Length: 218
Image (cartoon, rainbow, N blue to C red):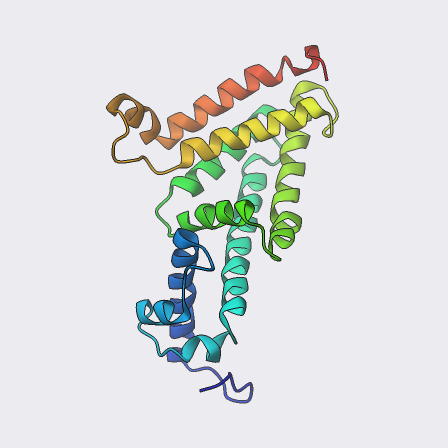
């Protein structure tokens, strides 16, 4: 096989193979980075013929773009869930909903943990898809959160104090959402283990600080 025949409809087996390739590639790219993973390794792990990547995607670059697109779709869903969870409520409640949804998605066991690892690699070594992630996921996310924080603080969403608070909130979510390392001290592990308690802490800590933002120099 040298390429996908657009005239031949994909069989159920074809679709299953394509999905396995995407799942395996997502984990490998997230763990080791694009350059250190070969098509042969992906195919072997997905129990597929080496030519399957070419057949379903065209080449390794196209497979990576498909993986990133899957990540974008999942992150958009998280954005949508966070908005819906707080829709029509006061800004403090919206912020709590935002934090709860994002933290639960990061710490969940629904095979989405690879997205955070992949995006961390992408931001450290940006590729041509970085702009797509920024435009379609991160910018809308930051605009939503800036509007909430700005309303709580009584400041404009683009105020530097608001933007710094937004980055602080995101940083806390990412920290508490990381997997617990094997040698983490027991006390720390207990503090990090319950995502609901962690979400409440981030919200309480952040809201208390946000309410005083207007008194700080811009």
